[in-house]
Image (cartoon, rainbow, N blue to C red; front, side):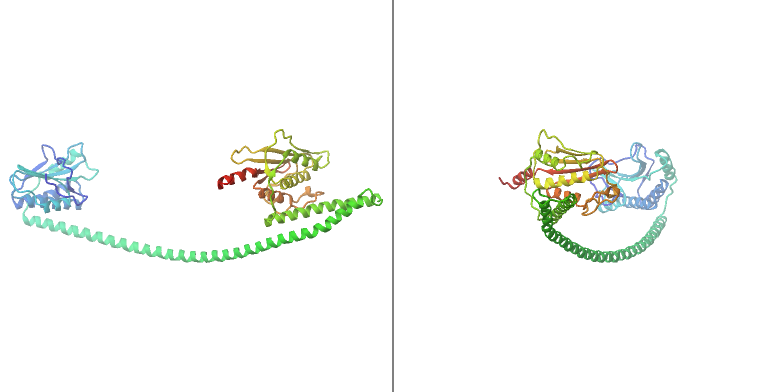
Length: 483
């Protein structure tokens, strides 16, 4: 079988060697092609049939041109006939035009290629003749195969013989119609190009405007960044100056305060000169104030060292039973009031913890002291438990009280240095606002966390989670490959 190339998606020859499609045994109509006049008539017949089957104008011209060229190429072959039919039900509906001959030369390749650019063709050739089948799918939404066959039969039965002049006039009309359609498409394309150019100009203008705005914004951002950098540097210098001030003033204050405390102790010693009750009361007040001031100075010095990164950590195993006993000794009966009790845990199985014991005592001392200060009745409870997370061993210390609580809007501010929640609960309870910030700073210095929750009128709960620094040291050595 000789197969022509398919160079157009609208048509083409079969390439897979399958038998060519064919119509029914009884086609709608058949015509003998024996002269040039018959070829002229075939063109008109094809165009009328395509129009009856609701093909678009361009498809009508394509079909008529392809059949005209194929008929002209096959003219002179023995027994040349052309038949029109529709694909039977069960297949996609299509118009089939079949050229069949019993003898003659094979079709010219140029003719097959030209026809294949316009419609789909299948070519079969053999020693006893051959045939060319043109397949043109029908438009969707037709009246059905039966109705279309009837319409096609009516058109083909009424075909009249045409002359060469009629065919030339028909070709001229087709050419004029095609030119008009091409002109309309060209005009539509021109309008679309103009609209596209106008859109492009708008997009370009918008892009230019956005670029300018972006450049302005970037300039502002750079200026703001520079200003923020200056502010950051100023804050850094101010923080360093504050740290230096705290360190210097703490050292300067510690010496006279120590002198005040020491002299007060000497005056109150049993072997000192006898004092009146009023003098003893005044000296005891001086000693108490001196101890309070000394504690404040020590806290200030520790805060300054922590912020400057000069507070050294000395991890060692901590005996939590002794630590709890020490805290119980510091606060033996709560505040000494009948309405508040300090409850500590009984550690039957002592958790293992390696950390800085001195800093841990300071953290818990500040938290317990703060809780007792603002609890009028009920209890302050210290709990110790092991964090169940196996990959990160830690011990959790929880201080819970039944005190006045902290308003929700103040929760984020209680960790600011020197900040104190104002209210009636402050009366008779002096403080500096260093307790919670100092405790959190020390907890973070020990690689731990401190979280606080509180409800006004119910109480406050502070949880300190401290990791086992000995376990962290072992993990670090394993990651580094050390002993």
